[in-house]
Structure formats: structure tokens, C-alpha cells
Length: 232
Image 1 (cartoon, rainbow, N blue to C red):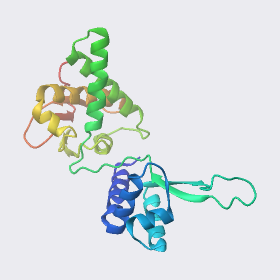
Image 2: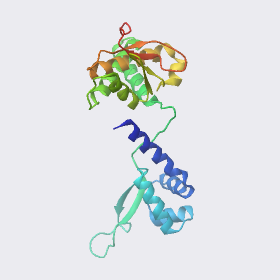
Image 3: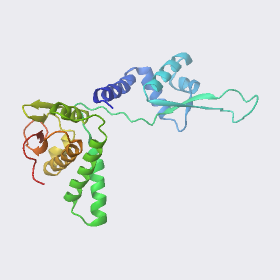
Image 4: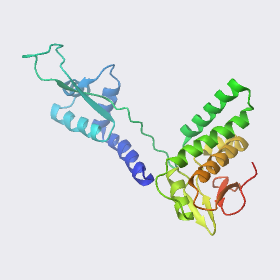
């Protein structure tokens, strides 16, 4: 999915909860142990039925709630009445951070590394490097458009939240998606990030660029460019 479109979708979902009545309905629905009807939701937050309908359907449209239809009487067949539309929390997960962060990806890499280290006895740092490379190859393989230039590389990295900026023959990454982790565990996380981006670039191909460690204030520790890659 295009990074700008995905970001817009996430923001729209969160923005839908800015309206007080809509937010109250959302909190009421997700706080119930089972899907609820429009009438029950309206009564639960003290809104008119038609007002509740408008806001509930808006929450569905934004992907925050989902619906199902069920006969509440428990009867079936002729005379059982029409099924009732019920609302429940949607499976979609929404998160917006500014600047963009991807602590979920870091968590997946570190969890996979710990499992490998515990199972095989491989040193944890080595396991983190390999797990980061696996994640990078997975991200690179999911890229559906050809990569033939620095602009193309920057576009791919923008989707991953790095806020790339082309400076001469290099792509400087203004944002670190793992900022808080890198601040507190610099050597481990910067090395993880290097392996992630190195594997991603290897899969993309099409350009003679590499990832290298080049720490500097106020940006990601990794730079992508035509110079030699950082040693393995």
C-alpha cells in the first residue's frame, strides 16, 4: 500500500473519534462482552436512535467497528422476524505516531531472535542480525514496483517511515523508526537496523547502493549510498 495513502487512512480512523458522541459510542460498543444493537448502543450513551445510527455507521465506514446480523429472539423460520444489525470492534488495528515509529517490527525481530537463541544456543546478537535480515528480505520482497534509481530507493524507504532525503549520491534517513530503542540500546538497535536495510536493498537490486553505519545527531544512524557497505 502506498505510504501516503496508508497514513491518510490511519489518521482518518483516529480522527473519526474526535467527535464526542462518536467516541462515546465507540467506547460503549468495545466495552461490551458481545456485539450490541443500535438501540442498545443509543440507550447506553443517551443518544437518539437516528443520531446513534449515523455515528455507528460512520465508525463502520472508517474501519473502527464491524457489523453482523443476528436474530436476537433466538428463533428461526417464518415469523421469527428480521435479523438485527449488531456492532462490535473491528479487527483492524490503527496506530498513528509522529514521527513515524515501528516498534512492532522491532519487537517481532527481537522476539524471533530470542526464540532462535534459546532453541539453538546461537549468541543473541547474532540471532538479532539474522532475524533483522529475514525481516528486511520480507519487506523487500513485498515491494511490487521496480527500483532503478535513488529516487526509487527513497520511495521504498519512505513507506517504512524513514523520511529519506537525497543528498548527492546518498539517501539520508531523517527519521529512525526505532528511535527510543536506539537511544537506550544504541549498538544493538543500530546494528539491527543496518542488517534490516542491507537485506532489504539486496532484495530490491537495480541500484549499486548499500547501507552503512554513519551516525549523526537528529537522524537515523544508517545512510544508504554508493559507498562500500559497513563490514559484516
